[in-house]
Image (cartoon, rainbow, N blue to C red; front, side, top):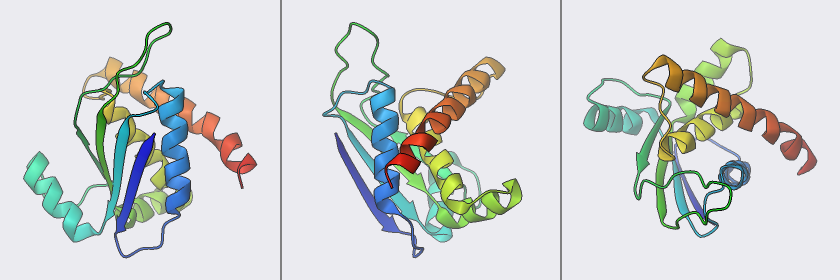
Length: 154
C-alpha cells in the first residue's frame, strides 16, 4: 500500500503515526494493498484557499477529501480493485483548536480527521441522518480499534 505524506503546515506532526493509522484503516476497510493514498498537511491560509475553491465556503476547515478512482471498501469473498484512492488534506492548526474545544490532544484530533477523510474517499458521507450515523459510527469503531494498536506499536 502506497501512502505518501507531505507536511507543508509549518507545524510538527508525527507523520509516521499518521501513515500507520492510514494503513490500519485501509487494511480494516479491505482496500487493495496496492491502492495509493496521499495525505497533505497544510497551513490555515492554504486550507482556506482550498475550502473556497473546492467547496465555495470561506475560511479554513479541518479536513478535505479528494477521491480519485472512487474505490470502495472490499467485501468478503471479493478481490478489491486497485487504483488511486485520492488525497486527504488536513490542517493541523484547525485541528489543534478543535482538540482544545473537545478536551483532547491535537494528535487525537488529527487522527480523527484522517480517518474521517479516508472514509470520505471510500464513499462515505454524512449529509443525511442515516449516512451520518453510519459514517460516524464506523469512524468511532476504527479509532477504538486503532488505540490498542497504537499503544502496542510504540
